[in-house]
Length: 141
Image (cartoon, rainbow, N blue to C red; front, side):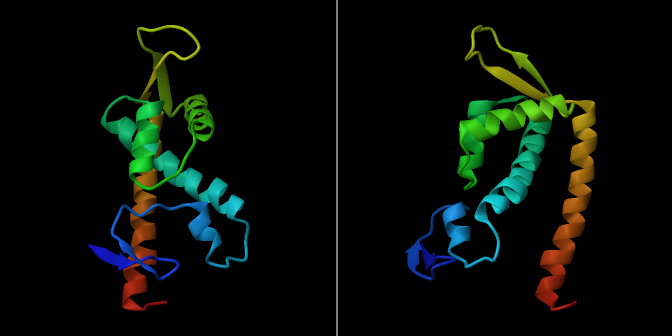
């Protein structure tokens, strides 16, 4: 299936949409693409992590693959500190697997506090989706 590229307008094969800083930068936005990456995309990634941790324990490499599957280009140097921060906040609980050492796999589970955060964020997402997407389609202001 072929379609027009969202930003450049060229016809391309329909592949998963990859949201990259390169694409965002080519829209002549009046703000720093680094700020977009750090603020908005990090928030998306956190919600994605909370969601998947609510379904089953996850580990970093699986989460990297999952986020990349959805089009997010994220490095281990960004993801692992993010997981550690979410653990410090009490949203995730990490536990080392059977192997030991500096590269031992760490499985993360959603905590009770993390469930409350996810529930709150889901409500905010519903409201935001309704306002930004649904009302925007109707042309309301």
